[in-house]
Length: 133
Image (cartoon, rainbow, N blue to C red):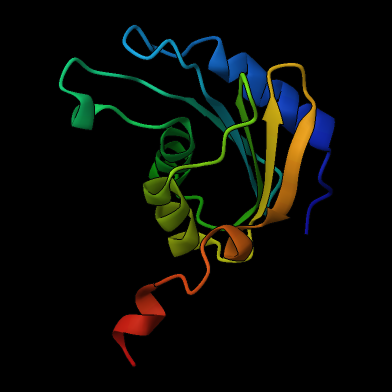
């Protein structure tokens, strides 16, 4: 398992948030997803005038990683102006690949609001294993 450098992860999430496209909500979100091999994939939220077509920062980072062939993750840092938590869809998408993922939720100043396992954010999560039961 790779070492987790939390300040670095948070700083990369903050940098990613500055690229967010959020003209409707003005709520910039950044994420930095740490892979088992040490790679970091960042993402920002991208809104759309048809609201459901937007994508969250967490899913952006995850999709970038998976599209590069990476599927083992250790931690994710998520930043918003107030330390907001990942939405339910993001929790479920992350759970698919890493139920034991460490989730670090911080604000734009780098202050950590929560640091907990994804399983605590998504109790009784559902994964592919459940399809075979």
